[in-house]
Image (cartoon, rainbow, N blue to C red; front, side, top):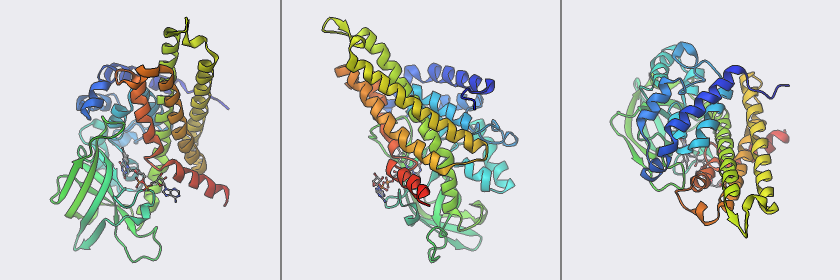
Length: 380
Ligand SMILES: Cc1cc2nc3c(=O)[nH]c(=O)nc-3n(C[C@H](O)[C@H](O)[C@H](O)COP(=O)(O)OP(=O)(O)OC[C@H]3O[C@@H](n4cnc5c(N)ncnc54)[C@H](O)[C@@H]3O)c2cc1C
């Protein structure tokens, strides 16, 4: 058993940390307030090989694994989740093309993505189908050699930025098995009838683009289908497994940052004639934060390591996501509390961390859904 990263992984930690600190730190508050970020940062990240680190080298990716993607997620989120998610989510869904797509689709879609020339996203959630994904009703009806898509999607990351989205669509509504009714289809966002509207006023990760999408008779060729028809639900679960561990890694990065900010603050802030750090109630908070963050971190990297070793453990991934979501909400709450009134101001990083943390309990499967997965697997 080895708890150390390899030399190459340590180099990735260093490079990712330097990049995020150099590019995000001074502008995170500006991006948060403006609800967007500078696309040049994404271009630079792609040029440095941070976009699609898990995509095979033959398609321009880093040829590395989910562990390395988790390292990037942790390091970027420790500086700013909104910008980090804005950068790393640009290849959200490429996992499906890499695993289930044709060679032609891989060659067409993956290299421009890793170069930073295109952006993609995954459109699964609908206004009335989030946790219960199989209830999605956006339809793709066959018409000659095309699919004609109608419906809407909700909360889609990169919805207004993406060049194409992998869309979870209903292709076989009468199939008695509700996990065989959907397929994944690539939709170019410049097609007639496609519309994306940015959602403003999010609690956190405001720099990251989130949109609602509508499809009004959007026509795409059948060659845009990824994998076999009727396999969309299974492909979505594949995608969630690879991605939700990255979301848990985001939590670890934020919790670590909340701890670092808190340590700096409690050493400096004097109350009742002594630094906050001298009081046991404060010390216990720091100890709890460290313990929770470290437990989350071990869950994340064990689960990621198992994915990369082809020993995927669905229960462990779901447990890591559930634990880390709750962990980061608790840690950022303690951090803000230790900052008192100052933590309530957006000039203080802990305010943003506190707001951003909550998303880990919601996207890529809520805490409740993750616990359902763990329990189901325990009770098999
Ligand atoms: C900022 C942001 C970015 C996102 N990005 C994307 C994206 O890029 N692509 C995409 O497809 N989606 C995206 N999502 C959507 C996200 O994955 C969903 O919001 C999430 O899966 C929850 O679905 P819902 O919002 O419909 O909540 P619901 O499914 O309505 O759930 C509401 C509450 O009920 C609970 N609940 C549901 N079922 C049960 C049950 N059986 N038992 C007990 N409790 C239950 C849930 O845990 C939750 O607490 C994003 C969301 C946000 C906010």
